Image (cartoon, rainbow, N blue to C red; front, side, top):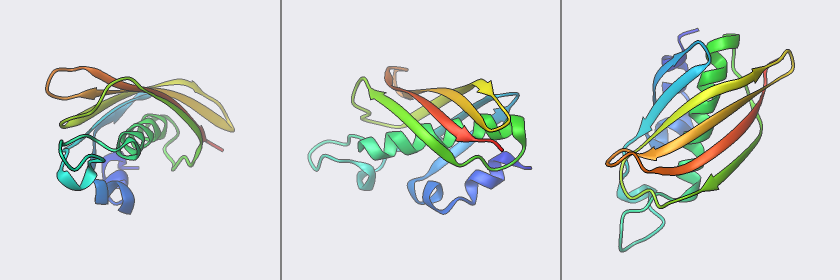
Length: 128
């Protein structure tokens, strides 16, 4: 499976502009260019929490897909928002466990401008 193409063709991720830039051996990276339509604040460009969540979920899924070579629907995801995302964002994900039925992935989301950690998440995905 061509992981980057698979996620590029995902309509919702495409709508938001989520780009998976790397996915191999249980690790994935991705980015999102912040724009006005993705902000929750009319006065200042700040990523809506759902945008940050979608980036984390998508990149987390890509990390697991790199190991199981099939789509992995999200079962559950927990995210902690640590700071405001006021510009472009990037995420890094690593598989914690890849089982026959479920897999677990840790994801960190950063502000691209200064590498500030803005969110950390743990996703659980269906693998079988």
